[in-house]
Image 1 (cartoon, rainbow, N blue to C red):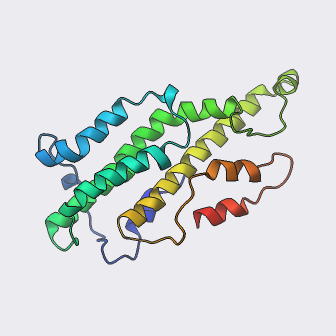
Image 2 (image 1 turned 90 degrees about the horizontal axis):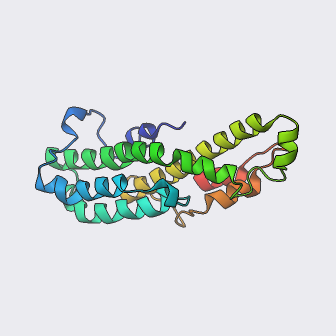
Length: 205
């Protein structure tokens, strides 16, 4: 699993600061700022029905939510020169890149596994479920499908994180970012031969 903290807090961006007091990151839930910017997102996450979610969700639907919230919030961050501005930035990052993503990861994991087991993306390809079952290898196939599902969710979260780095002005990416990583993953995946994921690696880079 990729450490998202490395992507954010080991950046060489001059806007980032390397000493953090996380006890001061979370805003009072009764404050107007919290009610305006964070409470609606937490309500949205709480009301998500995983059975109605189609991947990719984090890098599309939730990324759009983050961008809309940031556009209304970024005046509190300004140029990040004062302590209050830096704390405002830290709080937003803590919420959207850590707290909310942890909640979504937990909430969506079973749904993503279900998608893979139903072969909604033809991953793994060319597998006859009845044949696998007759060979007594169904548990192994299930384990592999779960691993693939977890990996695709993490890949989606990485795409979301990279978009966040660009959104906050820490990094810029030429040509924008594609969200169709699942098609790329499916095209390059094969259980019959060695897989390099060269296109997928290029997509992430």
